[in-house]
Image (cartoon, rainbow over all chains, first blue to last red; front, side):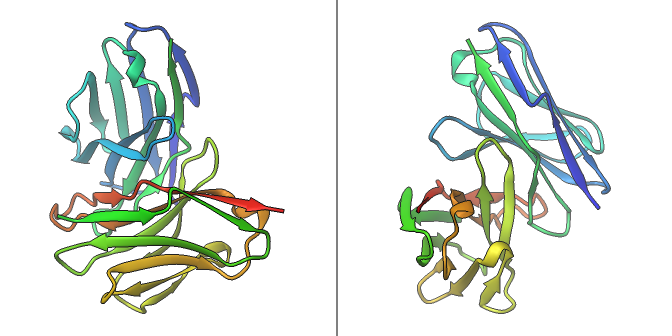
Length: 112
Length: 116
């Protein structure tokens, strides 16, 4: 069966510090991968998606970036965090042939 | 372009009462539709999905949803609410305009409160 992992689970970072969040999927090959953010009291915002290694599409211009160095690894990064980057970050995957997305447990990021 | 509207950001029901969460969609092609549930500080969990087979879809935890093309609706129901159903619920439609990306368009979510 497939599983999706995210780490860390929680993170507190000062403004201006760098960020690296990691997501890995097990039990499948060539998944589509997604990064979402949930700000407090708001819905899901799609940040990035990837249909293959090195193929990243950005949905919202911002100071975040994403990379996919391996087939089942998806990384969300920032060089300098802003207060507005605080939120709950969710990674998800889907198989190429379906639209069903499966979500990881999330990372709670607080920028102080 | 596809879009999803969830009517009511907060719904409150008594334990044992009917749960009805509303979702309307807009799609230029036959859609795939989804309901997800999110418990506090957790990821989203798939409740059910419609993929053009039976219009009444049964999901986990006693939930079901009915696809009504004429009303462009996909409302989520459960006959009897449990305290454990308190969570946030998201309706989503597949973004068929972006083939092979598997992108979903999510509604803004509905928070379900269950009162004892």
